[in-house]
Image (tube, rainbow, N blue to C red; front, side, top):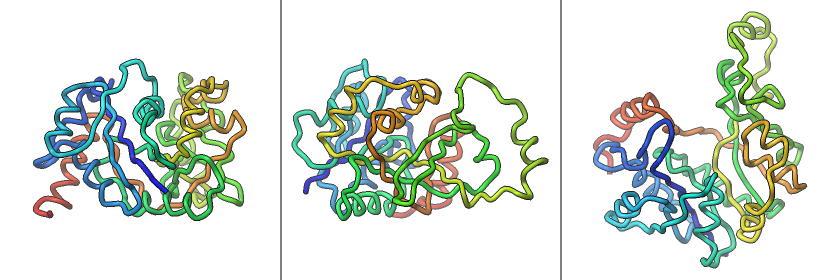
Length: 263
């Protein structure tokens, strides 16, 4: 069995342009992600798929593998599909390029579950939601699963959440009305890590989006809408993603407190 981990990295991020190349300690963010994923047993190749030569050159400068892809892709999955189109393998990881502290035990658990059980063409992960704020935050994607840990639905909440409809003062309303009764143990946060069977990934990116995907702006719903299953592996750590300037400042502080001086 051969597994390739692909890290999609575009330069023109809307909220934080060029974030893959921003420094975190002595290394750019993309290098932290790359080097952490390289530590996972069972991953044969780590590859950065980018649309910008600056990222390509930076990755190759530290000895990493990278390839150029088109600028037209609307999602990381589309970019990854182009990157592996001529690369033989059995499984393909989609690893977010903005998570320099990605939890390696989660990556290992997803791969182990896929290899040992092989129930679905796609595997992902989730962690428990531990705060009311996360529960009502539309940026925190929720997932519900069946008794086989296969996804029933993903949502920004409420189900289905319409991205352009604003819900004012949800946190204060639910804190007042529901906090004493709410059982957060029922709620799971989806982590943006995917492991695809190679053949399915190439098929998936050709599928048209359905109404649920368009309503929620969640591409994984396309898989469910077309009748396929996604297995969800329980995890304990959510990691830190860098999407905004504030996230970047938080990540720098976290790095200084936890990684500065470590090898």
